[in-house]
Image (cartoon, rainbow, N blue to C red; front, top):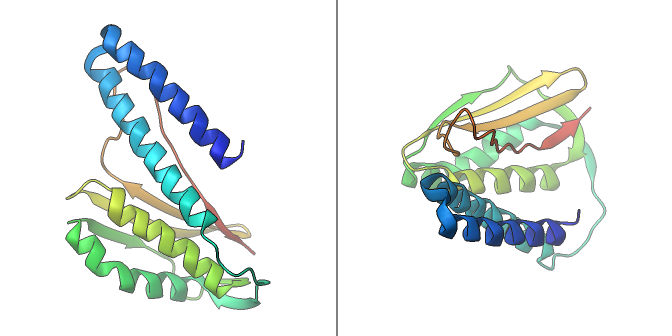
Length: 168
């Protein structure tokens, strides 16, 4: 699905869930609805960012160290993480973590991810950021320790997101 189609689908599901909430699903449905609205907001923000008019240029591929890029972006986000009262734990390999990529595009991806973490992670929670090598791929993970969905053996609900940043 295109992102706008996904947003329309989420909106439709929110409307259906809203009707269920009114009819008797109670607290759990309200919590799930609140989380769906939150995810809708995240996707809407991402779509807006992607649709901003920016000059299109061909990527300039160079051998870069992902750790340098992460360090550069993390240093610009310290104030945002601090304001959100997030406790950041970083698990990264020893340098270098080389890939061939466009530095500005990789930096932009990390900037968006770190900005969204600072904006949307629950205040005062732990955030774990890791970068690990898996064969030819670098796996980048952000985990916020907040339980985003009420747990119930019967709920069967899980929300997961991920991003492949680079492959070498």
